[in-house]
Each structure stands twice: as C-alpha cells, then as structure tokens.
Amino acid sequence: MKIVASSLLSTFRQLRAQTAKLAKPGPSIVSPTWLQQQQRLHHCRSNMTVPTRISFTQDFFFRQLFDTESSTYSYLLADANSGEAVIIDPVLEQAKRDAQLVKDLGFTLKYAINTHMHADHITGSGWLKQLLPGCQSVIAAASGAKADIHLKEGEQVEFGRHRIDALATPGHTNGCMTYVVREQGCVFTGDTLLIRGCGRTDFQEGSSQSLYENVHSKIFTLPENFRIYPAHDYKGQLESSVWEEKQYNPRLTKSLEVFINIMDNLNLPYPKKIDASLPANRECGVYDIPKDN
Ligand SMILES: [Fe+2]
Image 1 (spheres, rainbow, N blue to C red):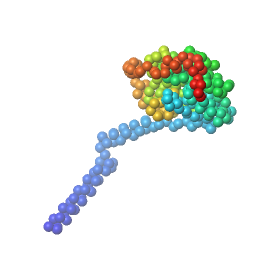
Image 2: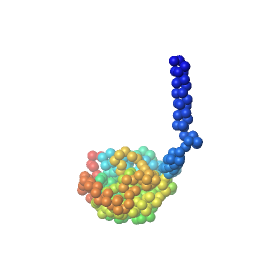
Image 3: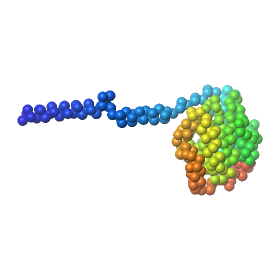
Image 4: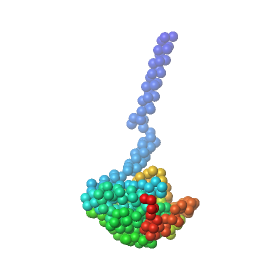
C-alpha cells in the first residue's frame, strides 16, 4: 500500500508541475488572442497618459478661493515681483476676506475681473473697489453690465509682467469670457466649461449651440496640458485640464445634436438668487453691500 501511495503522490506532483508550466504565459504557449489583448491594453494605456503639467513660474502667484454658499471659486493672481494682482470672479460676501488677503500679502489689486454676469451670486467687484481704492472692475462688453473696463474678444489684461488673454465664449450667457494665462498654462473658464459639466443655457440669452461651438473652437484647441479652473464646482474638484475634459466631459464629448438635446432636457429649477443677483451685477454689485460686514 505504501508503494501505491508513493506512486500516486509522485504522479500528482508531476501533474501539478506541468499545469503550473502551462499556466505561465511563456512565449511557446502564448495564444494569438492573449497577445492581441496585451497589445490592446498597452495601446490604451499609452493613449491615456496624462499630459505633463506646466509648472507656474516663480514670479506667478496663484491662489484659489472658495465661497461655500454659492460653491464659487475666485482666483487671486499676482506678479510676485511687482505685487500687482487681479482677482477673477470675486463674491460679494467674501470681499472682506479677499481684501484682507491682498493686504496681508502686500499686493496691489489692479483689477477685479468677472467671467460673466453671474445669476447665482453677487459679484464682489464693487465692494473690493471700495475696500481697495485704485482697483478697477472688468467684464465683457457683451455682458451689458457696468464696469470700469469692458473687454472684447482678443483683448488683454496685464498685471506686472503677466498677461491674461480674453476669449469671447458666449453660450452660458451672451457675455461670457474665458481668460487664458498662456505662459502658466491655465484657463479660467467661468461657467462656460465646468469640471465634467458646463453652465446651463436656458436663461440670460443662453445658447447651447454657441456654448458647444466656443468650447470646441476656443478651449479644446488650447494645449491639452493647460489646466482648467472653472467658476464653480459642486463635488469638491479643484481643477481639470483641457485633455481631461476632451476625454471625459459627459456633455461636450457628444455631437452638437446630442449636446443640444441634453441641455434642452436638464429641467433645472429657477435659480434661487437670480432676481437679486442680476440687477446687482448689472451695477457691478455695488448697491447691495451688507452693512454688517
Ligand atoms: Fe453663471
């Protein structure tokens, strides 16, 4: 019985060794299907490489700020050498915070710039002008809002040696601007392009077709490693990139026809603050400054 048991054990060991050898994807037993799968996977991975980000230059100051009530991002940018600064999309209720930050850092706020006439909050531009005399407000001429400077397509705003290019990207509203700092590889898209989304197009002369065409012709044609900084995010994302939105934006990766259909069927509620925000923002946000702040 001992001999039979030992022989069975030996046969079992041989079988296990052969099975293990067969399971190894060595060159002699690689099937064409397995090879094709590996090639496909490798191809996918090489196409999915995230483009290398452009680092900010040492003299470019960047600070992203957040307003929790409206989920708005504001951006303080400055030339670290000259101290000249701009703020993009300031919020009225945060104007005191922003002015204090500018003072703490020893900057001079040159411009308070809006990407568009907001419907969900009141701009902080007007109040910042009072808190930091010398600051000028900036918005697109097409917005119909009051400001010290009205921008048109292709115009520029300078602070220190840095430069912002204004691209007219109407669609969410008729006065939407996208601001590009090319040297630093960053784009401030307002509500035109959000992270994995876009602004609604059902009020303020909105047009789904214009939004789609402007995103594709003016933002998606920028270098793919440019960082996208939107005016809002409701899910905690801070930034995206041209590459990411070209790959993953669930609306703007579709055809124009499908996109228009999506936008026509969002069934969004009437914006809560629109009745207060639009009249105030038409006046640069100066007539409803909270007295207790
Ligand atoms: Fe908006």
